[in-house]
Image (cartoon, rainbow, N blue to C red; front, side, top):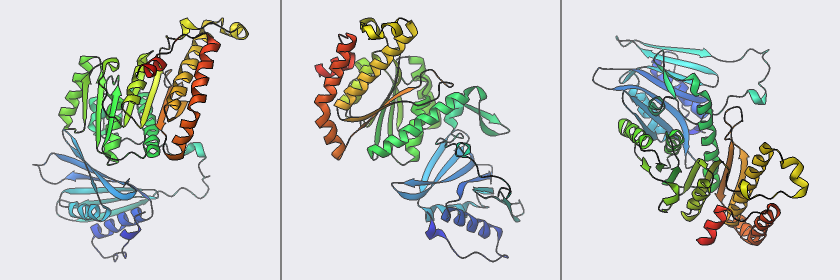
Amino acid sequence: MFTRLVTPPPAASAPAHERFLHLVRLALAGGQFGKLLLSGPVGDDDDVERLTVRAIELRGEPALSFLWRHRTRDVTKNHAPDAGLAEIAALLGTRFRNAHLHTATEEVQFAVSRKGRETLRVTRLDAPESAPPPAAHDKAKHRPLDMTHPVWSALGLTHLVKSEPALVPAMARKWKQINRFVEILAAAVHEAGLQAPVRVADFGSGKGYLTFAVHDWLQSQGLQPRVTGIELRDDMVGLCNAIIANESLVGIRFDQGDVRSQAVQPLDVMIALHACDIATDHALHVGLQSGARIIMSSPCCHKELRPQMTLPPVLRPMLQHGIHLGQEAEMVTDSLRALLLESQGYRTQVFEFIALEHTSKNKMILAVKAQGPAAEALAARRPELLAQVAEIKRFYGLREQRLEQLLAAA
């Protein structure tokens, strides 16, 4: 809460900019602040197009995040509340002619004409008294990423509609996947207690959607990201590095490489989405060797165990169908991976991170390094967890599993 920012209200005869700034302070103090947009830049020699201000928390303290939109790049700067409000006051009318404040209950528009005349308009957004309260599933969906960031346009996720960034309709599902992934990452970062700088490797980064998203979110949280996307295809690496150069981004790069031959370096977060078959096991092993506090994997193409499986008699009537056998092999593979990660001291979950209607590759293995009593409890359970791995292998007649082999050879 920004309670310390509340000041006595200005008189009705006070200049419009003073009354506008008072409404900004009230919105911050009452937790009603949505965002503040400053537009209509003054002068022709500046490439700044607009400024978006949002309320955030940095290391548990309130702050104001300023996203400066230039013609060719975006620049984010975070300020303490008082300093941020002072800068907003200095910008009104001198750097920008228009300001639009969005709150939970009203929209406030401030403008300065070319002759210096100030106007202030307040529009109430209160719902009619007869309107029923929204159901839980009707609440506004959390979107941790800012769609106005120019990197999304460069990647083909957004385009301009009436001079404003808008999502390309065909990319709606991809955008939902990206945001859902960042929500999961945010919760894991909180659980792991990561501090700046945060080192991330994204194996099989492809076109870089998630890599850029992780960098953007970590930067917005003041966590000084050091993000590397690692991809086999040279053309994808070149495309992503060109975007980095064009947008003057720091703390992110893309390298050509294969997770199976990657040199181990210290990491905080290891990401491997849709790594095919045993490439997932190699990525998990790299995460373990690097000391990553967070491991995020979305496996696919479970080919290793299926040819090895001998079907217990009781399961043969079910698994005689190819689709069921494939699903069973997938379940067994990822269950073994989860048990092995737990045996290495990680709190591990396997869950659906996006609905099947959006993608068939919807399973996530999330492992966060346990700390304190939780770490001690997992260490005590290690023999039990390894015995469970051995029993599953015996039940299905499995000879080998790649992650287990890599751990044994380490």
